[in-house]
Length: 115
Length: 113
Image (cartoon, rainbow over all chains, first blue to last red):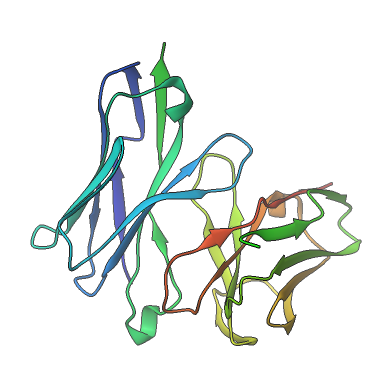
């Protein structure tokens, strides 16, 4: 099955700085890559996603890049704010029969933004 | 309605109790999921229902029994649980099992004494 690696496991930045979280995947059939933000005690919330036919996607201060050849994708947060502090999970999935319905998560990155 | 609603929010049960977790969505989604999440870990898939039929069981112990009475409802029946089953149980839904975009419920925090 798919294996998703995520780094770093913890990340501390000063308010206003940028934060980058990186993930790699193993299954070349994976074609959908979401990022979830989970605040303490809350549900995971989708913040941005990208499909394999696109190399980059941006939504205000958040962007995701995908390199299919290298099998890695990254989350970029610019002008970080204290409310960005949370655990971020990357994930990968494919529409292939044996993995249909499965979303493979990375281990998560605890992002702390200091005021 | 764009939400997945889970009840109860918190549940404490003994190892001999029988209880159920409930999940409801009215977005017309035909795939529904149960995930288990331990602190500081990613969600772990337990079950997937697609068009009200169980399509994935990730080798979950039989003390967890899922049920999908209709396209809007998903239950998780709990019996003879162990303390290590204490976790946040998340329900999610998507348009279909190949659509990928999951909407999560707020979760049910389960404590087994």
